[in-house]
Length: 173
Image (cartoon, rainbow, N blue to C red; front, top):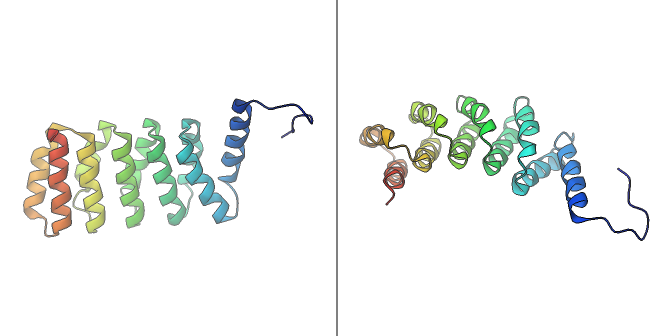
């Protein structure tokens, strides 16, 4: 990347583009600290051009990095990430399942409703709670009965509360 000649100002758009490219390159850095910060930065920047590279990285990432990636994808809110995030709901890693549920709720694509309902009986309370919250964010009236049935069989009070909140979000109250 060439620097502008001395004394010549660089416009903001060019600088932003250069910064974006530098951060995008750091996503593949061998240093996990640089990689993590780059992924988090891409989520904060909100440029959906990062979606493809993040999805590609997700397919080969270690669980601790995969969690950071799914959070960044949720912040980008790009519907292209929905299918890979749905796949993450089947992960043996509870943090990845929890992060994927959160991201699906942030993206807001109704395509995620059925897979989230299917994964609602997850073995981990925090994952079930996050799934219920994501379902509430999606706002599909057709799943209220599923959530009500789920509440009846749920032992954890925090998860029941999340499911009740989801129903309230769906009803707009």
